[in-house]
Structures are given as C-alpha cells and as structure tokens.
Length: 448
Image (cartoon, rainbow, N blue to C red; front, side, top):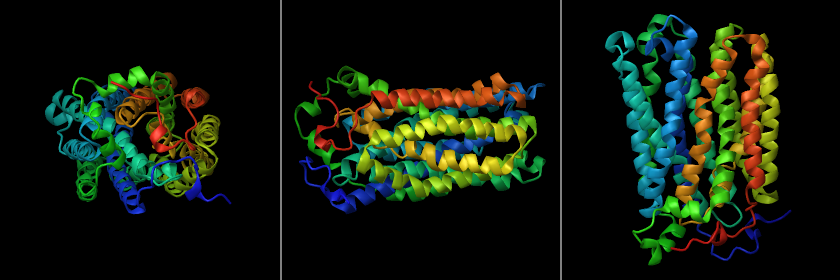
C-alpha cells in the first residue's frame, strides 16, 4: 500500500507540523458548522413557517414562492461577500477575515430570531428579514473559501483533501444541527410554533458562535500565505486580487463556478423537497427532516474517507462519480416523495447525502482551491464558489413554480437537480487534476 506521507513525491516544501494542520481542520469544522447551521435553518424555516409568518397571501403557493425568494436573496449577495472577504483574505490574511465572517453570520442569525412577524409589523417584517438574509449571504460568501484556503496551505504532504475535508464535514454537521433543530419545533402545536417556537433555533446559534469564535481566534496565519506576503510585489496596493485572478485563472474560475452548482443538489432536496411533500400531502415534514439528518450523519463519517481516497487516486474520479450518481438518484428520491414511500425516502436520501453528494462535497474544500495560486486563492475560490451557488439559491423557487403542488410532476422536480449535477460534471471535466501537484505549484503564475 502506498505511504501517503511519501506521495506526491515531487513536493518540495517541508511539511507543516500536524498540530497546525489539525488546528486548522478543527477551526474549519467548527466555523463551517456554525455558518451552515445558521444558513440552513433559514432554508428549513422558509419551507415550514416563514410563508405564513412573514408573508401574507390568499394563495399558499404564492406565499411559499415569496419565502423561497428571500432564501434566494441570500445567495444573490454571497458573491458580494465572496468579493469583499476574498479581497481581505488575500490582502490582510486568512485568520482575521475568518473571524469577521463568523461574527457577521452569528449576529445576523440571532437577530432573525428577534424579528416581529407580518401581523406585528406589516411590510417591515419581510423587509427586515430580507436585510438580515443579505447579511447571512455576505458572510457565507467568504467563510468556506477562507477556511478551505487555510486548510490547504497548512495540510501535510499528500493529505490536502483529507484535512480540508473537515471544513466540508463541518458543513454537513451544520446541516444536521439545522435539520435536527426543527424536528421538535415541527412537532409543536401549530399556534405555538408560529408564535415563538420557530425562533428557538435562531437564538440558539449564539451558543455555537461562542465556541467557534474561541477556537478560531487562536489560529495562526497560514505559513504559505505569510511567506508570500513577505515578497515586495505581494504587498503592492495597486492590484485587486479578484482582477488578478480573472486575468491569470479564467479557465479555473469557470470550472470551479460550474462545479459549485453541485450545491444545488442538497439545497434543493432540503428546501424544495420538504415543500413538495408538504404540498402534495404524502409525507410529514418531520419524516424528510429525519431522513436528511440521517443522511448528513452518514456524510460526517464518509466524507473524510472519500477525501482520503481522492488523495490516493485523484480528485476527478471521486468527484465525478459522486456528481453523476447524484444526478441519477434524485429521480427515485422524488418518486418516493410523490408516493409517500418512507423506506425509499430514507434509502435514497442516505445514498445521495451520505455517499454520492458526499463524494463531491468532500472535495470542494480542497480541489476547488487547488485550481488557484496562493496570491489569488481566497478571491478565486470565494467568488467562483458563490457564482455557482447562486443557481442553487433559487432552485427551490424554480421547483415550486414548475411543479405547483402537482405530485404527478415529480420527474420535472427531479430534473432540476439532475441538470445541476450535469453542470457540475462539466466543470469537473474542465478542472485540473491536482492531487500530485506540489503546494507551491498550484494554480497559474501570478505577476504584477
């Protein structure tokens, strides 16, 4: 069996101590868990509660579309956050930028839990909700790219995918927390849930924020970034990292943006899947929440191993297999929802979230960032990631409009997710294979 410590053989820099790599991985895990707990409790709340708490309409489908539209607004502003925090991360460093993204997300999410309802504040209720969703989107735009960049640059030789995968695993943990948080809320009496129960998951985010902040503030700056920053040209104030990235990495940017559309698969399953089943009345929302929680629990265990496999055999075979399988499995998933087959719902959700999507998801924190040079890595990864994720944000709105509560249109519902998986496959074909590329040789040359 190949010794991971000796591959790739061409790596020229001395490996960092495992302590730094483990610390960066832990910080990435906790930070991502908080960010995506916060970000995805809105997705669940938009499916179950917000359409009648913050919006008013005689047509429930219209109110649901409005609720999902505000969900999409968060994704619209993620590229802005990616540009802002990507610029800061490539100019002043990864560590301080990551502390800022964490604080912004925690404050925005906690504040949503304090908002008045439409009945209490009228039109100001959805306006304030939209503003806080914008802040969530700006924060999420910079979080994952920063944690991924730091993990890539601190990982030992031949283990970049493995250590970086803990940031992706943190995303899954955040999804588990966000899903599990609403299981008891959904079981509440409807009047109590709509009056105050839905606020609990948002207010509870403050506890996770405190833990993640205490870990993240002790991080060291990435050694690779610190070394590059010492160079005179790197300190030039006349260049914008994003513009440098576009000029030097155009193909990498397009490939990562397309691969990022894979985010649609999970967002769509959670956001639209719950709404679809609720509208046609075949399955209780708590059933899907439990299935998603189980799927993400499986992913927490499988993603590090899938990333380790990618460190051995390459990024492309692992990611592309996962993307292709996800595009196929969404059809039996939506069929199971249309007929109310609970065992099949759990099986297909477990296979998608815990295996096929996990295979692709485990690598976005390493392979995507490996397409860029260290000088533009944060900006390139952040903006490309959010450009692709923008499509994911509006996928529940698209699905709701296309299906309109008609269970017989389950194939049309599944096709939306399958198209997203197909776009991700195209991006993977364009991307460079990087598992044997030394850290110092990643990306294209960047000159000022």
